[in-house]
Structure formats: structure tokens, C-alpha cells
Length: 435
Image (cartoon, rainbow, N blue to C red):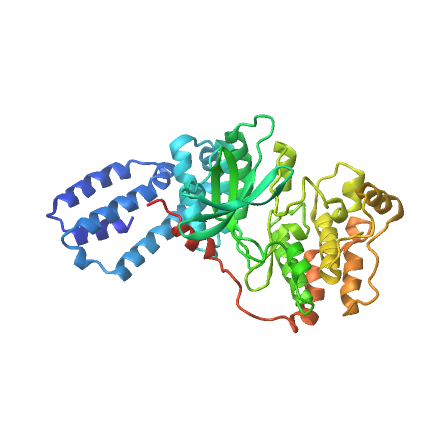
């Protein structure tokens, strides 16, 4: 660590703390690679403590400290890459448990939070997910404290409830899971943590950010930004006639393409799982969480509808006729249904109340929502028609969808700045610190 000699030089060789640092350095030199990585954050905090308490603090400059730490982080990243790309050391890494595993998870998450431009980001993200799954832990920063509920439950039904809350002065949405059949909260947290871990690594203007986990009244909860505009369904029901519907379609397409490019299937795309930001942009929520519903018999909802109400209207035929899991093609089918609702303001098959009847018509007759009398521009309906083709392999990929949308739509879109950037969740999380 280049930070060690720098602190020694700044503190002064004749100071008492310098002797302690020198003794610690001898101990650190005996550590193997994994132990060194696990203790890296502790060592840096310790050195900062010595630096801040030193009478020679004036010798240190912010630029020097930043440069030294950057050098150390580069060395740490190189060390991590070596461990994760070697079969033997990677196996040893995955076998870590308890405090060592927790320290490694915290270090990896810190590195991912510090930069979204890391070349080794996919490698580190995968290792973080694997280690978390093996040891049953998640990064400490996921656990939030000091939540205060505001008012009454704002939505709920089936197995999930939505509350408005405050943490560190920040208004948040609290999505609380209903425990079912005496589920162990630790088991629920472990399974929910896996999906939250994936969510945390993503950052995109058209994906709802993730802040952390909270146990509310013994019920695991996901914490995300509060959206005054609510979900897209509510927004469309209350919006004026001059809203930019094509821009909303483009937003959903961009968010879905980002998920698919990261090999994540949403699994339950519909307007109640798409939120609308303060500037009127659409951002996808609840991606990847549909699998937890099956595993834990719970659901996290953004609307007052109960259970899986409305899902059949957005489900691809292959999901209705077999036990096949959701896939990229079924997401594209659901995207077409979302586009229909954005364009018309009506749910797919609005004229049919019975969802079983809808499923039968989709499966046996290849039925689709009826085309409106007027669709402007026409190319949007042609795209929708391609996206809900009966055979999944005939539907376009999200990358192709964006290509078909980009030029004609983006010329008409308000190019206002996004509501958040890559650092948003990390910056907000700083306000949640218990100290």
C-alpha cells in the first residue's frame, strides 16, 4: 500500500502513532491475498484515523491523499482480477464465510459504487453475486436504518404493501413483503437480497434506483425513491391529452434494452411496474422480482390491484400454455402490450373482463388487442404488431426495437436531463448513514 508510507511520512517518524503503524505493517505483510483484501477497508479507516489525529495533519493535501488512494485502489483491483481469474483462488474466494465474506462483499460493493466505468465491472459484479449466494450475506450498505412511515398504507393487495416513508430526510417508497405460512424472515431476506444485489449494480435513467433493504414490522422491504407521479397506469389515467406518448414508449424500450443487455429478464413488465419520474419520464421497476413471488409466495406491488391481477393481459402465449419461464421474447411481447396501453390509454383486451377468456383467445385464436381507429404514426403500430407475434423467435430483440424507434421518435423527444445519473443511489445513500 502506497498509502502506508505516505501516512508514516505525514505523521512523522518520531510520533508514537508511527511506531504503531510500523508494527501493524509487519502484521499486514503476513496476510495472504484474500485476508489483505478483506481487511483493506479497515486498514484505510485506521490510517485515516491516525492522519486526522496527527499534529502534522497540515502536511497532508487532499490531492496527495486522493492520488495515493487511487494508486492503492488500482493495486487492489489488479489483485481482485488475479484472484477471480484463477480457478484455485476463485474457489477459495467463494468458500469464505462469516466476517471475512462480509468484508469482501463490502469491499466489492464499494468498488462498484465508486465507479460505473470499471473495466472489470462485469467480473466483480458476478463474483459479488456468487459469493453472496454462497455465504447467505449481502453488503452491509444494503441494510438501512431509521425509517419512519408517513401516513397510511398508500397501496397494496395480494401479498405486498406500499408505504411512503422518510430516511435521513429523503422521501422513499417502502415495498413490504407479506410473510406467508410463517416464512422465516432470514430466508426471505436472503432470497430478496439476491435480486436486490442485481438491482443495485444497475444504473440507468429508465430504471428505478435501489436504495436498500429494511425490515419493517418483521417484513422484508425494498426501499426506492418515492415517485409523486405514481406508476405509468395511474399517470396515463390522469394525464392530459398532450403528453408525449412516443417519448414514454422510447423510455420503456431503453430501460428494457438495458436490462436485456445485462442478461436480465424482467418477467412481469406492465404499466403498474413502470414508474413516472418528476420530469415525466418512464422508469422500469420490479425487474427480476417475479421469481421471488414463486419461491416465497409473496409479491411486491406498486398498485392497489390484488395478486397477479392484469398479468394475463401482458403474457406471451408460450407462458400461458406451458411452464416455460419468462424470457427475453416474452418481455418483448409484454412491451408491445405496454405500448398499446400508452397509445390508447386502455389495458389490452379492455373489452373482455374475464382473464381466462383472454388466455383462451390468445392461445387458440392468436388474438391480440384490437387496433385503434387512428394510430399516429403508423410505424408504431407496425412495431407493436411485430413485438407480439405468436412465435417468440419472430419477435424483434430490444436492440432492434431501439433501432426502429430511435430516429423517428428521438427527433420529437424532450431532451431534458435525466432525473438521476450513475452516482445517484450512492449519493442518496450517504444521507441514510446511521451516524
